[in-house]
Image (tube, rainbow, N blue to C red; front, top):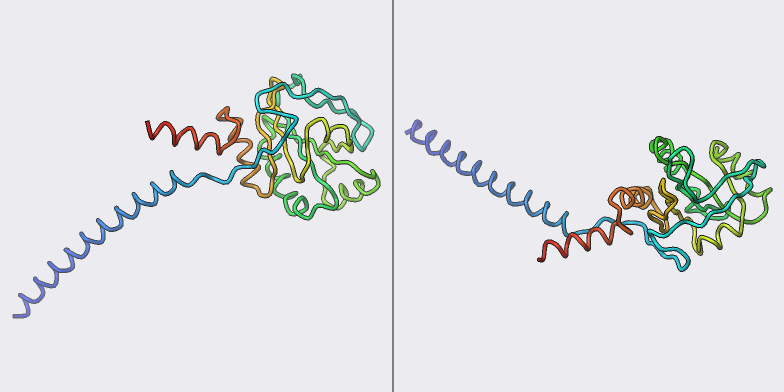
Length: 204
């Protein structure tokens, strides 16, 4: 009687194991489908002056430490540029600075960070010292912001190694910043455009 009970219990347990395996497999597939359908939150490219793919406006500007930095154009070192607009009065900018510096260091083999803003230079000098931004060119220029159509902060524009606008958008998180790099790599206007194209191809 005990042997029969053990045999039956083992059979029941094996049936449960098989059923659980099937359920887990089905859930894994469903998660994969949901991941494909839900697009990642890329940076929102709101800009009336620039379009992705066009030649970036070329400017030669003086940084806050009196050196010169060329924005746009074909760089001599073959690296892309990340223009990132910040402000001492922008709380989101302050929270993003550690991630921005980390990203600039991690991607330094192919891109250079240029920080930009406007206003009184004295405010920016304290801002640079407080957040350790001395390693990157810092331009205080209203002309730069107007030329590149920057209306809201924090905002970023990636200029590729050929001097063209590769990607751009409002940046509220590290994921938004990474989405600009991803858009450049995939040669699309934005991650949203990339996901929309993929969805269109899957429907065909």
